[in-house]
Image (cartoon, rainbow, N blue to C red):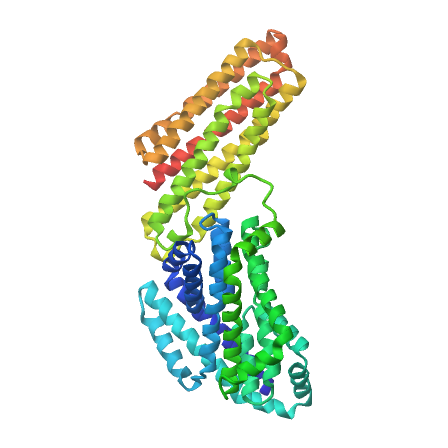
Length: 534
């Protein structure tokens, strides 16, 4: 029964920390992003912003995850994040200090107020603030369950032996704190348990301080996991977070005795001693490392080399995560990014005849590289739209979002047809040294020109939301299908006449017409999306 209460209390404590932090993050999301990206250019202001935000969302790991996202999106540079990371180390002490006050008797009141506010609120921000209050109530309620039942562990020889081993071996204490924090992804929850054990006299201050050091290392696991597969700049953020914590522990560990004595002199309350140890450690490493952030940046940049690919094709230009809480603005930014994507696709289609008319192998490979950019932009725009807050979107914005997803999907399909089909046909013609007949090549150019013109008009209709222009393109579907059939019959006529050039290039010729017709179908689909959106 005691173990059930302890596990339940720990789970409630952890859930409360996460619930309140996530609710505060939702309620203040846009302001938090503005604060991070706006103040990070000056070191002291970056520290202040990092401390403030982490104190609000109650997790240095969550702040680091935000930084990784901002760096990946190009909103911040790696060097700008260093001050914020050090500030986050300071801000993370707020939650532990809050837990150390042990206002557990007020937990039912906080839970009641939080639930009532969440249930009655109709607007998003009051509802989020109600959930934050509910999370704080759960946090203190979980701590109360732990405090009320942890004393019963004195009757368990195994629990006493384990805590005794942690208390009398600094190395075991650091390891235990690191592993547990990594598993529960929260140093605050780890220190909440340590605080409860110390309050009942089960854990001496020496062991608690070692757990504090280990918990600061273990909290880095979340950022490390999130950086897997990210850009080099984003990986450097995670490495910086880990480096500051590990170096800080390495510097303090040899002097853990004097450090513990200094902590003991701050207060007689064991719980407050643990909270103060956490605060002194994080304030200390932040003050110590802040003057050396330029040197740290150079070292980490050398440790994590730049990505091999260039920046330009694989970087969004207009979407900004700070606008996600304003759907209308975010959709406008996504539309600009989609128009940039459309320009790339239009350029790829424009270069198709040049590839077939010459032995321009470099241009062929350049067209294929541009399709990688199209794929990247389509994926990033979709991910950006997926993070939009649906609650704040009305039916008009929902319709606009659906239309935009359809547009970028069709643009990506056009890019794939050019890359995987038309460029492969161009490579085949180049390697086999084939030559179109003059009449056949003129027909291919004519049909390509018709498709290109319709794509250009459709993009213009998309940019200006011009229903009439989109309808004009859509009305040409029958004409385009008929023209493709006529050109196919014309080519077959040359085959029946025995024209050698037509016989040699027949397969390539017909496949080009087929793929241009497929592109035309996707152009029509874009026009339909524009009409449905309006």
